Length: 485
Image 1 (cartoon, rainbow, N blue to C red):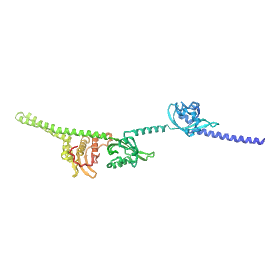
Image 2 (cartoon, rainbow, N blue to C red; image 1 turned 90 degrees about the vertical axis):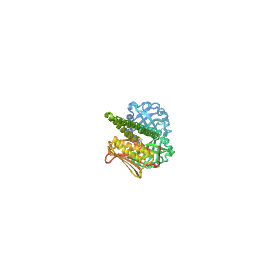
Image 3 (cartoon, helix red, strand yellow; image 1 turned 45 degrees about the vertical axis):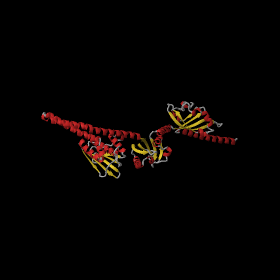
Image 4 (cartoon, helix red, strand yellow; image 1 turned 90 degrees about the horizontal axis):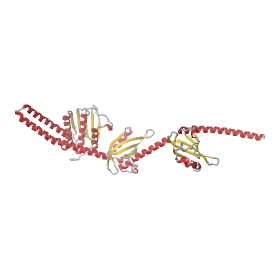
């Protein structure tokens, strides 16, 4: 009997220790669950919430008293959700197919109506017979991730379907992304483009441009609306407006370059057509002023002078008036000829660009009341009439801007041949040229840039060291003789 009692006491002691350890374990488990930075809840196979952690209460806005015993559908899961409809089946099958139900993502709803996305890890809680009695669900808020995914999908759709070519290249120029716009503009499929370097779509004489632009963007410079030329698969030259952005990783290290390229070939064609029409109208008006108006004014001057001679023996006052009218008419003839020369530079077609620029300098000095000189290197000549006209108009615009906006009194024009091409320089002593963003440039400056692009040149406008502005146009001359446009 004593042995049996001792044995029972020993068993009771062990049982007590086990219960204490169990209580300690339960306390630790409870603290772990309550302090966990995630949603923890238990659901009966009928869909009733039997446990709702403190984090879940804070996340959804329900207290335990409000939520326990309530059905999961219509509280935290919207009506119609497939997960909520199939809880009984899930509880039954989760044991058989644990991998199928182990994880899920669905949209939830908070007490205040705010919609959230939650990623769930689900595990069956079995009864004594091994059947699914409840489901333990551990969830994490993935709302921000879902929003980012949606934004990325939207952005990807916009990029993919954009009319502009949007490309991404690694730092060596190898193409790693090529959208539908790029396929349409350049004619290369995505599969073809991903095997190419960006230099494939850049004409050989512009390959140095790739390096220059890459260096500028790597230094942090923003390249926006840079106008250049690219070449399509069918060898067609395209006018392109280019915007370049440097891509960096999470550590701020550059890893790629993205470009947005807009085909402006048709716009350029229309601009050139407008410019050509304007040029023809200027020439027509210049000819009309020189020929028709000049003849009329000359006739008036001659008639008035003849009238003065007839009136010589009568009234000296009337004779003086006739002579004054004759002088005014002669002055008007001179001014009309000056205007005609500015509108229609005949010297370009007869004596070439050098002669036309020399005349432009002397006429500008006379008409505008400034000092304007022209210097030319011995070998500098532009025989291509189209190029010559564009260079003349650029110089004319630069002089007009210098006097009208820069208040210049001394202007110097020079034309010389260098190893890199022909160089036209217009310097003035007026106001310093202001640094303007592309969207603030005046019409005159834009026209100068456009004329320079037409002849494949480069335009540079900057402050002069001594004050004032220096305009430089560098271009390759085409020495073919052209008598007509």
